[in-house]
Image 1 (cartoon, rainbow, N blue to C red):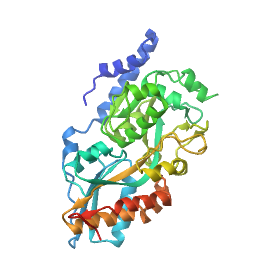
Image 2: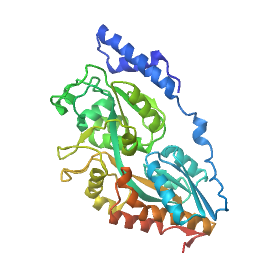
Image 3: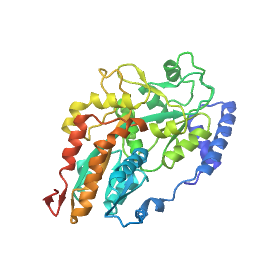
Image 4: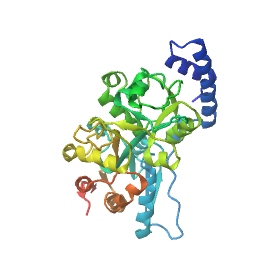
Length: 387
């Protein structure tokens, strides 16, 4: 991505079409700040996402099995814990996971490079038809956090669905907009422009957020929709969670989105979001688990059911949460390889769940774990059940 100072100014000016000259001077300063930050962030070359993932490093004693996985950055910290825990009892199995984003992981999976891919957006029936038979195993869930840089705010930011959709659609361009002020009575909101930051790569985190926006805002649903990548009405694109974090941390007035673990690890504030019960709820493993519970009946029918914007009866549920799915070829010609992938995933969706809450993910309830095991049992070798 190449962004000039004039591009940055244009973006901010577009967000403030009726600004006075004084405001435009401030916008110019903000544009310079954004340009400076993005110059340091940079973007990964598209070719990087197409590179074959590195082979697992050889161990002193040759491994019996080597598994390559790639995809979701959202699940990366928990995936590392799963790999570490699994290899303590299976030292002859080497698992290598590369967090390149859900979109890039799916692309590598389609090329046959991976033992499994991780995606925060499940494949639709139509997408599955385009590739060889694939199973999709829910592995964990967690909240997508709204992060911000408002250093003089005297209380945690609170946002309703109306305010959040207004910000990302470009209808809200100032931090002192009446909708935001209504959400935050008594707060010292800055007299500055709202600078939106979003992922520029194919991202499952983007899918969760835009699925929520599509559900709560009809205009967003019609104009932008939801998916790993969407046409953003406004804002600055940054590559990966690391890029979004860098821009938001270094630029006052920005708003972006991250997975909870990464936000906590880097000390950025997260907003409380108003749910349909009218409660402003902070993103936590417990409030994400409450969202899962609210959709238990839907998940029993299809584990791909979204868990955003739970009903008003779920008073403690955080409204922007989603599952991570592990995509696995349903059939392989080699039994040992299929067995290795199955056993690792079986560990992740059972014993591995004990690591979830410690790392700011929601532990899947027993009913979802059971459903995941039923999906995993569909794996075959040369068309025959894997035993």
